[in-house]
Length: 299
Ligand SMILES: [Fe+2]
Image (cartoon, rainbow, N blue to C red; front, side, top):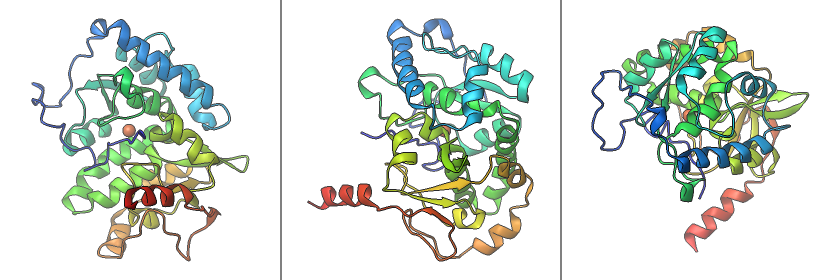
């Protein structure tokens, strides 16, 4: 099965049925000492698999962030150790949560440069399938990019903008921006698409698919286009949006989304695989992968 990052299913919606944590901000102790040898072994399997795949596919900022963090194959990282390095670099820290958290709580954390990371790790028999983001997705996928000042500022701005979007009834549109950047974003480096999205870098299959397969579209990122585009939460993306430079996120973090919300409010939505006349298409996908999936469903 494919690893789908679920952080935006209803965006960062409620953890499924579990008890609400005692603290109002939903954080829990990481309890690092309680990870078992099997859990560390799952981390190691995932870490080594991804580390082999990422050279030449992940963007330079991700590779640099990874090299400068206290992350290694042998053990699930200690959030306090990570936070120490991260805090010095970009003022962020990593806090443990039991799984998905309510939107308001999520935004509040991001707005204060706290990244909520799942405390648990997936089971050895479900390496490629996740119902909620675990420590591998959240730490391996997200934290290296939080070492980058541009991404650090962008995700904080997203948290600040989240509550406003909610009050305006535009949460879904804002969530699409997060989805197609922070989770599934690509960026051009030396003319070729490279990965910076956490949903991709934490998935072995999508790492290859996103930058090498001829099935998906690769389209230059455009804010309102993305706000109107639905996405896949259960499978690979049909379209990846590509930044010219990572620094484009700097401008995006500073722009007032209100005029864009006004323009896209009530406008037609686009299907995940649809190409539009105004698109700058870097690669027109064959759509083969998803067409085959649809055939299998109807057969
Ligand atoms: Fe994520």
